[in-house]
Amino acid sequence: MSGHSKWATTKHRKAAVDKARAKVFAKVIRQLEVAAREGGGDISANATLRTMFDKARAASVPLDTIERAIKRGTGDLEGVRYEQVTYEGYAPGGVAVIVETLTDNRNRTGAEVRNIFSRGGGSTAEPGAVSWQFARKGQIQLGRSFDEDRIMEAAVEAGAEDLSDEGESWVVTTAPADLAAVRDALATAGMAPESAELALVATTVVPLAEESEAKKVLRLLEALDDLDDVQNVWSNFDIPDDILAAAAAD
Image (cartoon, rainbow, N blue to C red; front, side, top):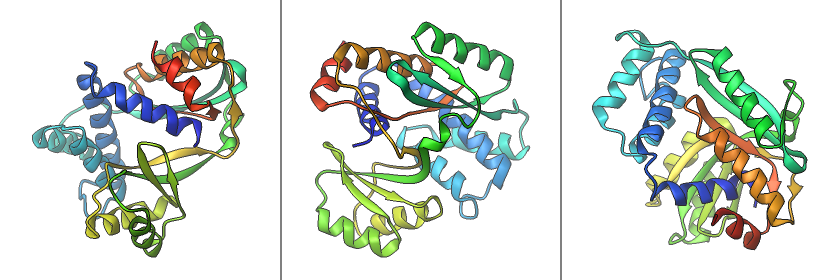
C-alpha cells in the first residue's frame, strides 16, 4: 500500500469522530467553485465538477450550499476568487510531500506552509523537486463487502488499471480521464463507491521503520492538512501497519 493511501485511511477514520466538519465543508466548497469556474456549471458536461459534487454530497454538504458554490464559480453570484498553488517539500526522513492549495492570498498561504515544514523538521523545495516521484491517477474506494472478482470485472471492462486491497477497503486505480466512466460502471453494477477522486500516487516510496520517525512525519502532514487553504497533502512514505497504528494512536 502506498503511504498516502494509508494515511488517508487513518485520516478518514479520525474524521468520522472529530469536530472538523466545518473545515471539510469549506475545502469541498472551494473545490466546487474552482471546478465550476474552470469548466462551467453543468455537472453533466464538467467531469471535474461532477467529481467534486459527488465528494460534497458524500461529505453531507447541503444541496443548496453546493448550488451556491457552483454559482459563485460561474460568476452568477459574487464571491472570492481562489487560485491553485502547489508546494513541494520534504518531511523528516526524506519523505517527499506535495501540498495542493486553493488560496485568495498566496503570500499568506506560502508563509504558513513554509512555517509548518520548518517547525515539523522538514523543508520546502523548488517546483519539480519531488513531483517526479508521483503520478496523477483516479482512485475509487469501495467497501470490503463487495466481491473482488465482481469489482475486477466491472472496473476493468470500463478501463480501470488496477485493484488493490487497502485493508478496510478496495481501491480501484484509473487513468485520470477514465475516473468517471469506471465510477459510473461500478455504481451501475450495484457497487456504489465510498469515494472517487483524482490523487497523486507515489511511484517511489520511502520506508519508515521507526515509530519516532513515523510520528514526526504524520504530525507534519496533519499540520499541513489542518490549514484552511490546503486541499490535499500527498506523500510517499511507507510505514508498516503496526507502526502506523501506534503512531496514529497518539
